[in-house]
Structure formats: C-alpha cells, structure tokens
Length: 182
Image (cartoon, rainbow, N blue to C red; front, side):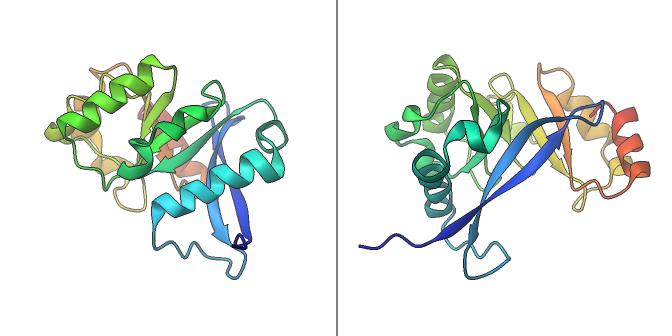
C-alpha cells in the first residue's frame, strides 16, 4: 500500500515577548492548500508518521515543543506513548466528550510526562475534572473576541494553566490579549 503524500504545517506559537516558543503541527494534503480533514485521527497519525520517519523531530521543531491534535481514538491508543514527550504536546480537540475514561487517560498521559492542551476551548463546567490536568487552554478569537471573554477567563484563572489566544491578526488584538493575561 502506497502512503499518501502530505505536507506538514508548522504554526508558530508566540510567548508574551512575541518570541516563537512552540509550534502546532498540522496535516495538509499535498493535493490542496487547505486542511481537507475528514478524519482527524488519520490526519494526526500522518503528522506523527511524517514527523518521525520523513522529517525528524529536531529538524521540524529546532529544540522547541510541538503540539499535535488528538481525537479520542488516537488519545486512547498506547502507541501515542512512543512519541518523545519532552518535545511533543497533545492538543485535545473540542469534539472530545469528558468521560471517566478520558479523565483517566489524561491522568496517565500527564503522569507519563506529556503536556496537555485544550483546543478551541472556553470554560465549561463539564471540563472541570480536566482543568487541573491540562497545561494550556487555547481560545479561538475568531469565535469569541477578547472583550467577550472576561467572565469565562475568570473561571479558568483558578486553575494552574496558561491561556493561549489563537488567530490574532493585529497588534491591537495582541495587546488586548496580553492585557487579558494570555
């Protein structure tokens, strides 16, 4: 069986000093410039396979951390633990339903040394068992502008996690996020 060619996207993540501190690693089909993803687990598996076999972790990340998106089936798969946890973080997609099995698996991955992140997330009471386990919550500013986030951000601040704003397009929005504690 021939492996489909794909491109590996590397979206920079900036810190409060506007320096690249990590990357989100993304699958892109070699046939399109868009993320035509019908199965997120297959897409993540391709990112992992290409990163480990074709490119090399050091060449892609240059000593920084890289985050990959994971759906439930990939998250629950033990082969995930083969990844170099000192440089690969796991981004839990917003489609995940919080269940006892998911919470247990996140405990296991956290104890194994993985950095966990919630993707495209706003405070939800059903996620409260996960907040102590995650290191970062990513908020999509295209969905919810910074000024509309105050109450939900306040609820997240009681947990030991970092807030990361996604899709910042202007320096003004960057400054609003900075002022809000992202």
